[in-house]
Length: 141
Image 1: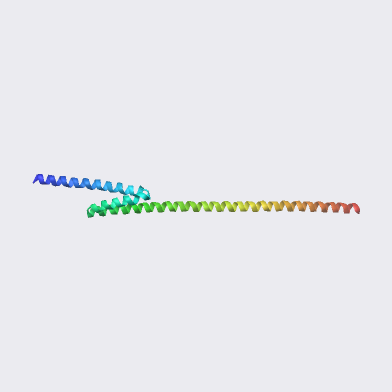
Image 2: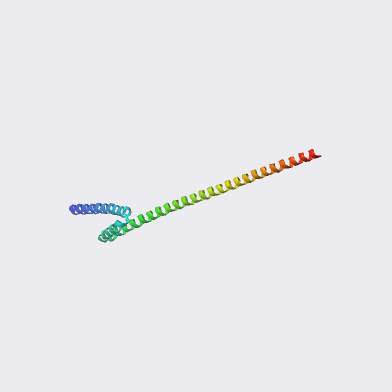
């Protein structure tokens, strides 16, 4: 009886070791699929499907669950990266628009300064002419 229990124990231990090895191998296979270029991904996925077919129902369910959770995690990370990229682009656009507004304001100010300078020169010229005319009128009187 002790021999049977011992063999049963060894058999269960080997089953657990195989299960752990299969789990590690499934993880490695899933990582390889995710890291592979698109041209190889189809082939690796077909190999994974063949391996799934050889598993018992429980192992298959666990492997599929792992695959789904890893794919969902990857999609979430991708979505997060896209949001960061979009935010960065939006900030760049806002910065560019701000710079354009500042440039327009500076051009407007330079234009006003030029116009004011021209007006001052014209007024100075007219004042000088008026002064000269007044001086001439004083002399003629």
